Length: 101
Image 1 (cartoon, rainbow, N blue to C red):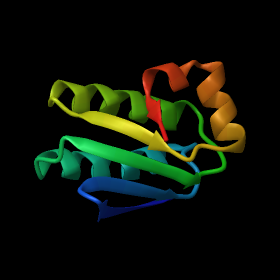
Image 2 (image 1 turned 180 degrees about the horizontal axis):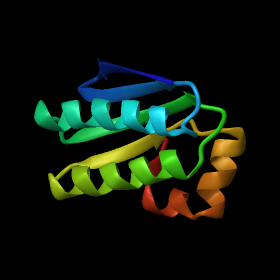
Image 3 (image 1 turned 135 degrees about the vertical axis):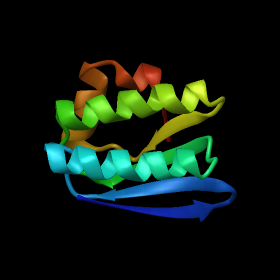
Image 4 (image 1 turned 60 degrees about the horizontal axis):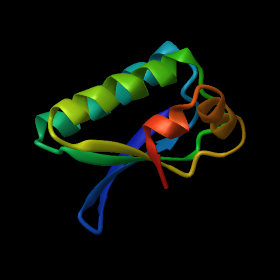
């Protein structure tokens, strides 16, 4: 899994390429998100349009950074979940916690 960061209309977008279903993917995501917070970013959108699978590794990191961004006075949003990922979000009611675009 890879994460790429870009600015789009004043928002930080983290595009994820690959699945969030193992420890290495969770580590990559965690490092990327820590860098954003360290750089003073308080709001981010996670683009999940290229994520086909997610499990507890990925969900755990999303929840961790949801709280960290909220504690920093910001917000973490999710963009374009689909297929299995969208089903997981709905089953776990994460679509009620995260703002989904």
